[in-house]
Image (cartoon, rainbow, N blue to C red):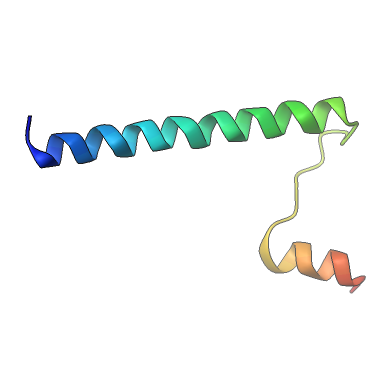
Length: 52
């Protein structure tokens, strides 16, 4: 096994972890009554927080 193979395995594992986080966040939004609204990100989230 080369260093490149190890790197690819680690990247794949990290992607799986991130996918799990995303799935958990979707489930929590459903449970908390988010009503299927998409979460705001970046500048849109900041504007919403500031009431702009």
